[in-house]
Structure formats: C-alpha cells, structure tokens
Length: 586
Image (cartoon, rainbow, N blue to C red; front, side, top):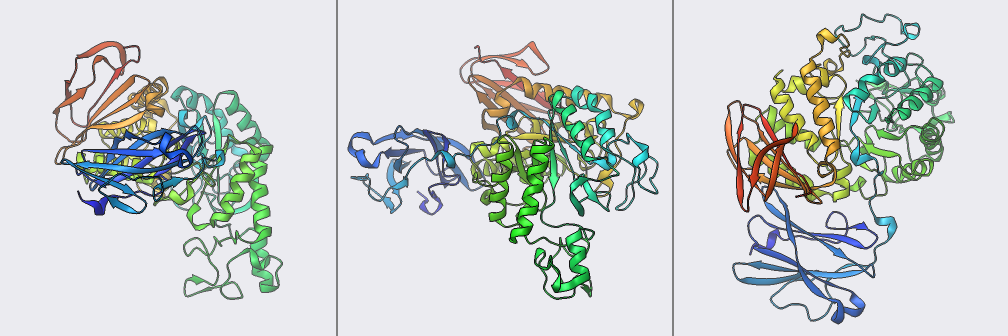
C-alpha cells in the first residue's frame, strides 16, 4: 500500500452534506493501489450500538489517484468515521491519528462531522441544473433601435475592434426572442449593460442605469418580463472589482485628491492620482488607468454596490449575477453580497469569473458556481488541439469531479467559448464535425451548458476582439444544419434527466487512444456517449449494462440488445460520436 497517497479531511469536498440527513464521504488513494475501501462509521455517543462498516464505490480517477465515495444516512445528524483499506490481502485502518493494523476499539481519534447544520448544505437554485444558457454580448447581437446608436456606428457585420460600435441594443434582443425559444434556450447571460464608455461596458460609469446606447431601465424591465413570459431567465454581469474612470466618485477623487469624500473608495498608493511610466499610482484592473479598482472593504462602497445588487434583482426582476474578476475581491464582501441577493430572490443564480481552482468560493456562503474554464480546457485540448489523449481527458475530468461536491458540479457554468476567448468554431479549425464532437461532450456533462451567441449558426472568430463579431441574421448566411444540431442536442438534454443529475463514469479512456466513452445514469435511465476525437474513422467496443439500447435521434431505433457483460461495437467517423439510451422502464 502506498500510504503517502491516502488523503482525507472533514468538510469541503471530502465530507459534505447532501441534504438534512445525508453526507457524502470521499477519500483519495494511489491509482490502482486499493482493491476495496470501506467506511467505518457511527454515532460518537452510542458508538458500540451504532458503528458499522460499509463499502465505498470508486468514483473517478485522475493520472495519479483513485477517488472513492459513499453516502451515509445520519438519523442523528452527526458522525464519527474512519476507513478500511484493502490491498493484496492486507488490511489497514485509517483515522485522524494515522494508520493502524487493528480496527479502532472506540470512536476516539476518528474523523468527525460534529453536526449536520442545514445552513451548511450547498444549495444552488432549483432551476439551474435544468437550464441551457445563451451568452449575449449586447453590442453585437442585434440593432433594434437605430435612434440610440452611438456616434460613428459602423455597418452591421464589419470587422470588430476594441473601440468600434455596431449599434446592438436591448430592443434587438427583444426582437429576436423567437430565435432563443426555437433554439431551446431557457436562460440568458448578458455581458455588462450599464452605462460605460467602451463597447464592452466593463468600465462602468453608472451601476444604476442601463447604457443609453442599449436602452433604458424601463426597457430592461420590459425585456425581463418578456423573457419570463417565454420561460427564459435573465442574468446580468456585475463588475464590482473595478469601475470606469468616468465613475463620479473616481472623478471626484481625481479632482480633489486625498481631500475627496471618496478618497478611500479606491486603493491609492500615491496622491495625486496619476500614471507614472505606464503604471497608475492606484490599483486597477491589470494596469488599465481607466479601470480603477474599488475598495470593497470600505463600508460606503459596500453599501452602494449591495444596493446595486438588490435593485436589479428585486426591482427589475433579473434572475442572477455573473461576477467579473471575482477572485480579486475579498471573501467578506461576497458573503454579504450573497445574503443581499438571496434575500431579494432566494432562487437567484450567482456565478463568478474564476479561471483557477474556485473551491474557496464554493462552500455555500458565496457563489453557486463559477465559469468552468478547467472543463473548457479539457474539451478543447482533447478535441481541438490534440494535446490530450483519451486517458488525459479522463484524468482531467476525473480530477474536476473529485475536486467538488456533486451539487457544485451539477450547477457549474460550463462553456466552450466566451467573449473573452476565441470562438469554438475557430478553435476547431473551422471543422464543424470537430465542433459538434466538442458540443456533445459539453451537453452530456454534469453542469449548466452555455452557448455563445452565434455559435449555433456558424459564427467564428479568433481571440478578442475578433470573437465579438456581429450576429448573423441573414438565413442564407446561417449554417442551418449546425442550427438543427444545436436544437437537437439541447432538446435531448432536456428530455433526459440523467444528463442533468445522473452519475458519471468513464467506460473507455485508454492511453494513446483518441476515443472516449462514458455513461450517465439516474433512476435506471442510462445514456452512453462515445466520441472519436481523431481525424480517422475508428471502431469502439463499449461495455453496456443489460437492456435494450436505442439511438439518441430516434428512440424507436434499436441499436443494441445487451445481455450481461456484453458490448456494443460502434463505428465512429472522424470526429464522430454515438449516443445510446437505455430507458428506465427496462
């Protein structure tokens, strides 16, 4: 036994509450090292009567470790526990005090979950795991009102730059709500819509008003109401890390220096506010002088920003916030932010822009989710870039599943591109079969899938600002085959609960292979997905549990009748995929 690899600690992703009387317990061991891991557990006050040993299931693996998991029912909402490790006929017992050859004689020295408090249960909004999001960059989606166009607006469909405008606005979004409905979208995430100088609006001037080039607060309320009537929720982008240089408190500090009433609203290293050798004398987003960083520890700043959060949720009726540069803001602010937002609407969805390990923000007291860039990287590196083989992809995904509780994974915001990245089709070298393979992985993975506006009709583009091209509205210029594919995969996800809440396990993922296969399962319904991420046709032998299996595009088309320990032999073209379903009535 390689004991150096064994790891567990109470709380976080290792021991967490699922509901008011259930815990999930996990442990890490060296990959391939243990034949079986079991959980010894009981109530500390009646240990002799209550303790027992139950086997744990292998959850996932990554390149180095196996992760084991089991669910424990807690009638009295408290638990002491340890682990039984078995390998090649040897048995060891693992507790908080270390490793032992004999089982514990009592509960002292075991790991402990002292009490399961309801407030500690991670709970994202109930609607989120069933949602399909659409990501809109308002300036480039549709121009619905030429009267509010900025000066110098360019012809729709021109080459985007960091400074030009094409006149997209909120009325344009309202005008195309039918497109969203026909696509199957149930929620929209907008990049910032508040008053700002730039086309991207991440340099907020006034957090309480819609940019006049987009419309008005009244029009935003009309948009929200229209979307809600059509079963579509609305999430806005909040830029609380920094404001724009036109923000009135910053302008006051710029004029009056350290005598300004707003001097402490910002992180100032040296007065007066200026730029020396390209570096501002105050903290900013990156080194952008026009994006001064807000001091969210200042009580007046907090009061102002929390009122912004409340107003748009409670008065306008939006359904949540996406939080820009979320990791550069103090945790204490985000805890108050969550309390404010959830008081206004307990079902509001809060997710942050964090590109690295977000676990400190996902303990139930701050965010419901983050933008899942590690998932993005895994899919792109496997399908588009060829940096990962099947084993590498399985390892990356396995590690991600192990890092978070199931509730966190199920509510994660899963993207393949965004306004900040090159578009998916561009990343896939304009190969639409490759693109479809990536989208299949996205829509059959746990979490909340999001489509960047225009991807569904073949919009392409390199890194920002090229990714922020104008939406294609001429039917003759749209890829209607790609649009039908998106409609089908969205409908398929909605029709199969196992894709939204089911267990996930890999079936194929060998080193050197470019073919991956995995299964989703919930209440007897099983979906098996196989993806060939190579440019040649392959034959994949995929294990199936017993039952009658059909093809995803035709539930009447039987493709396999599996017996015990049988396989399906699938012919997959270059960048092809297969999706098989076994209904729960079997």
